Length: 82
Image (cartoon, rainbow, N blue to C red; front, side, top):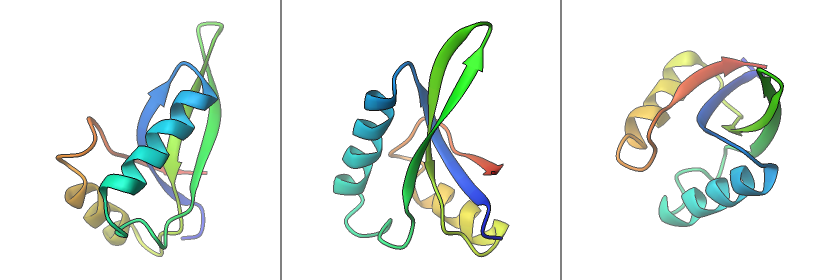
């Protein structure tokens, strides 16, 4: 499932989303090495936000396993198709 992503959070700016992804990479000690990070703009009621996403998952089970692994590091973990 090349289009499967894990959303770790939503931020008010692209820079904040990128900073959160970079910080998570540093704290997770290589767990995310195979999962490229990306930000995605999102408009909610006329306001711009940015999703912080991790990709490169081959299955829902693999993505969910990463969510389970990161449960102490992130506030939420949502699977998304992109």
